[in-house]
Amino acid sequence: MHFGHTLQKIRKNRCLTQKEVCDGIMKQGTYSRIENGQLDISAEQLAQIVERLNISLNEFLYIHQNYTATPRQLLFKDYVSIELTLPSELHKNRAIVERYLKKQADPDIQLLLYSYDAMIVMTEQLDLEHVRSLSEKIWARLQKLDHWYINDLQLLCATILYFPLDTAIEVTKTAITRIDAYREYENDISHLKIYFQINLSNLYIEDRRFEECLQLLNDVHEQFGKQLTYQTLAFILVYKIICKHHLQLSYEDELQKLRMLEHLFNHEEVFTQLHQELETYIPGFSETENIATKN
Picture (cartoon, rainbow, N blue to C red):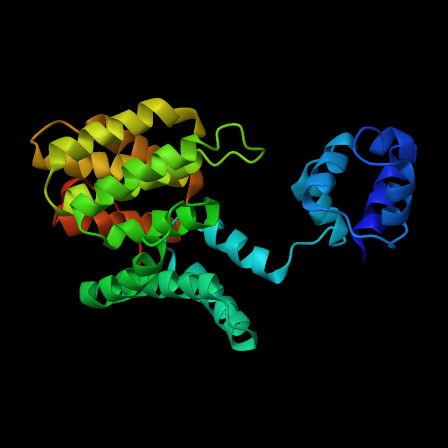
């Protein structure tokens, strides 16, 4: 369907005349021909008309697509909806991406496939060499870009887990600056700052830089406390426990909050993964602290 037909439908639904919509942007005769599908509209004029109709450009495109997202858009939506690397979700989404790529080549969607593969290998095989080779394919493309946009930032957020720590620190700093540039964007992406820093904290733990990690986690908790989902909060608590254990600090408060979350939400796959994290960095933790590990 021509853009003009969608413009006409929205204009009529809003009880506006053609003159009210196009005044100061273009002549009414020109606009009438656009609505009738006789002329194409420029990107600049479309943006102005859509604003006059009191909707966003993204909403207009969604309406134009008959209130549906494109298959490509859905792939990115599924990707960013995965907050934790749960194997069942990773395999399901990877299969959808693979089917898409069999129908058409797409370098950006190929990066999604590499990212899913890296997360699956890391979760199920712990093959760091393989994981890093996959993440290097993603970074090889993204580091060439002069500017990172939202989809790039979402990919980077998941990928920095497999970067050398110093590289991940610099990437995170740059990414947060880019995210801040979107503070007035219609869709809030500030949650990416949370995920970048939590992923960075994981690298700090692997490098045994527990003091710096604890400071980072405290900052994230303090700054974004009200925005945290229970899964994100649970990971922050687990990483704090790991840091405090190795720094010989009390973690009773974090442990009580973690037990409370587990009792309230009872999401077995999530908390099994959290217990595994604790056992990895504090062997025997579940038995020592009387936490029941689920099988």
